[in-house]
Length: 493
Image (cartoon, rainbow, N blue to C red):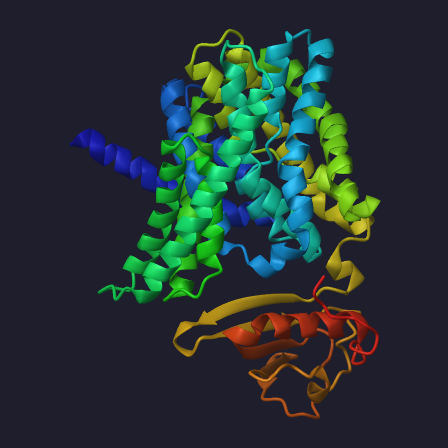
């Protein structure tokens, strides 16, 4: 009983410290996952002395955490945000992954002297962008919806083909052309299972009369986890099934939808904290010294060669400008997923896999610190920072489930063409209305002749049916002013 008490106490303390670390990371501009890894290292053999070296258990727990992170990402992603980026996101997460694996494998074979299969295995482990890192970092950056949507969709989907590639490469059997058919089968069936269970789950939850509000979030998350299990059971991609079921459920009209999304977000944070602390606990700082050079070499190859080529060959077909391609290349954040994938060969006793795990750990820490802290300055330098351009207003949302409505909070940035526009000139669709304006420390109910000003905070109540149209109209006026419609600006891109 004393061991259980100690474990619960340590676990609760770690979660509290990790929760506070989020605020610290935001202030310092550091991705929170680095702090979580640091907590794990401090608890481990070089800190408090907790010994943990079970690769198979780490892989299993890491995969479980990854499922919950993908479920949270799917549930909290709005279809309207990623719809303009579906083509580019799918290309990056499939064709781009294969290009990245091939290019990284080719270069690492010659530079590090790895045999072909091992070099391609390194490429497969490093090809995946991390969903947790991307979701937590990008959703705080004021970039365009198409760019953010491409990265979110890519990070939600590309774990699946990378996982399949790693499993294929870990084995000893020759890999033929039938491997491509196997991957296509696993992705297609996984997508079908995820979409079907997400739709069926939404129908069931809308018709169910559960006795407690708190059961709806549990049921929604369980549907997504069931999709993962169903996909794995038929040798399809359970990761893709989990993400897509969450995406379908999150965009359906669910009872107590806001409670479900809040629960999923909290569960996602818990999974991230547990996963990164676990990986930090598993890491052995004494071994990492020998992995610094291979890790930095692999990181340079992926960041400056494989990733840019995969983005260029995937995104160019969709008319993506070079500035956005540069940002996409740099924003391919690596996090826990490569480490979890590297655990697969280690748990199976593949020769050289310990070096792979250590190199990936070094690479993840270095790239996260370098890329995560420079994304915002890079976006500004490339002219993609919407706040600097003053052409993409930021809209936060609170759900009003009982009224089937939403409360939009709009902040008017400096340079926005919303400045000086009368409320009547917004021409919001029927069902949406401006309810409050906060200005200079005060607040008032506006009338049709109220003129908006820079730094105003505006509250807008809108029904579910016209929410997307209201947001699009606000963005259109923000970009082109009161005559946005005449200038062909719709605010949908």
